[in-house]
Structures are given as C-alpha cells and as structure tokens.
Amino acid sequence: MRRQLFSGVAAVMLLVLSCGADRRNPRGGGDNAGPSLQPSTNGHLLAQPGSPGVATEAFAGLRTLDLGPGRTASLYLPPGRPPDRPSPLVVLLHGAGGTAEDGIGLLRPLADEAGLILLAPSSGGPTWDLLLEGYGPDVAVLDAALAEVFAHSAVDPGRLAIAGFSDGASYALSLGADNGQLFTHVIAFSPGFWSPGDTRGTPSFFVTHGTDDQVLPIGVTSRRAVPRLERAGYEVRYREFAGGHEVPADLAAEAVRWFLGNDA
Image (cartoon, rainbow, N blue to C red; front, side):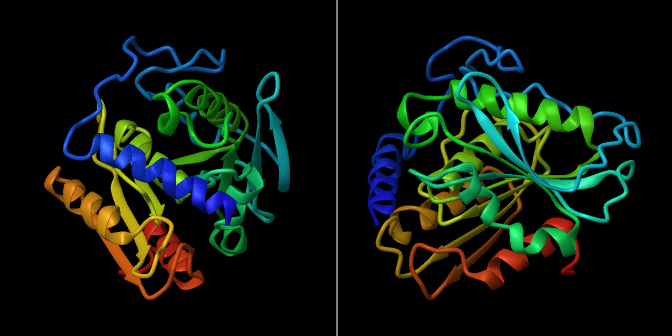
C-alpha cells in the first residue's frame, strides 16, 4: 500500500503539471544516452537490434545484468528458443518502490509459451527519473541493458515492446512515444499520465485501467491520456475493467496476443 500511495501521489502531481502541455527536453541538451551511462536529457535511446541470426546466446532462464556501479537489470530468456532465431522482446518497468523482479513478474507467466525475451531494469530512485526531475540516468541504464541484450541475443526488430505498471506504465507511455523508431508496441497497465516530448515513430499502444482504481483514479489518468494519444494519431487499444490498481491476468494475456499479432 505504501508503494501504491507513493505511485499515486507522484503520478498525479506530474499529471497536473504536464496536462495539456508537451514536454520538450525538460533539462535541455542532446542525445547522450548510451552504454557509458551518461544521463539522457531527452529520453532518446541509442541501442539498436543487431543483424538477425548473428547473436547466438544459448542461455535460458533468469539472469542479472551488471550495468555499472549499483545498477542492474533482470533478463529472462525462454527455454527452447533457437538462439539464432530473432525473438520478440518486452522491456518491463515496475511501479514506484518496485524492483526489476516486480517488472519481470508482469509477464513472466506468459513468456515461455509466447517465446518472449523479457528485460527489466530497476529505477535508480524511488520511482523513474522522469517523474522526479526529467529524463536522466534511468534512460542511460535502459540503453546499456538493451545494448547488452542486442549484442548477445537475436531480437526481432518488428516485435519490440516497452511495458509497465503504474509509474512504470506512465514511463512506458512517454519513453515509448519518444522512441517509436525502436519500440513497435507500448503496453501500459494503469498509467498515471502521458508526457510527450520529442516523439519519434508510430508505435501502437495497449492501455488498461480499473474503473475502481483508488491509487491512480481513471478519470484523471487514462481517460485523459488515451484521447490525447488518439488525437496525436496513434493506434490505441484501450481496456477498462471492473477492479482497482492491478493487472488482471486476462488483460495481460490479451496484451501479449495483441503484441504478437495473434488475436485478429
């Protein structure tokens, strides 16, 4: 409950500040995120998938990526996956006060059957940098984690998603739109806001929210953010459900089917 309260306060505060206005490089500067862990000021990621069939990472299961002093990410590779066949990848972002393990848990029950590579960093502070001061070191850590995965695992560039829950969902919406040349899909479970910056590309969006959410009330969050996404020209699948601040298993499964194009 403490995590949920922090998430709600942080997200709603930023929603109030950002509602109706776009975010344009809140701390100035240019593209300097990368494996060197230099903070990004505009949220742009530099890592790109390698050539299909080149990477031959044979490891299967959960492992920890060391990304520099005090910074790690969790990586899950499904068993039985041919190492040279490009696989879909989902970046998972935890809620406020959470960890990489919480992020992995969002889709871990579905990863094996769907053949998903899961990558989940941990935020450097109590929540993601955008909700505190604007884009910075968390973007750099994610960039380094992606570069590590792309260097050792074959990833399908046509099925590359960023997803999250609560504060992580808000971060996924914003970072996904700002990196639409990399992410083809964005999945947001109970987000607090969308704060567009220097947007790129045209990813597709999947958003869910509980009508009884007491942490991030739907009326001032998704019911505002989704129409803004649609007005901006994005394709959005939006699902409201009778429930609170949570990720229903059936909607998580639908999100994966939508991502993989298996629910037509």
